[in-house]
Image (cartoon, rainbow, N blue to C red):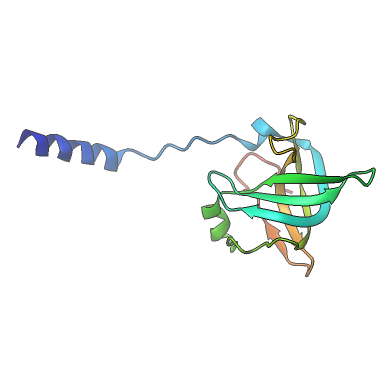
Length: 139
């Protein structure tokens, strides 16, 4: 009986405890004074938590191929804005507007890191990928 009382009490505590989300702010990782606009081809859309990523193959100023890893919202937040895991597919041409990461060091896979706010598909459809209350610029 004691075990049931203890489990019931634990259940109530868990039920009444607000969720805690470990999350970084936009300002902690990205520089709002360094906007970027990249045109390229989607390498992949990584539909993962806590943030999804769009990998875009583009060319740098010298014409050398580079891959950009653009952080976007969580899959759940993207779904609320009409995105799904096939909103962007391998080979889709896109233009991405966002902000550079404060740390310019390439990620472990060699890609350059930025935060995407607006993704424009070749058909002209603009897809918002930022969050107005994440501490980033609102434009």
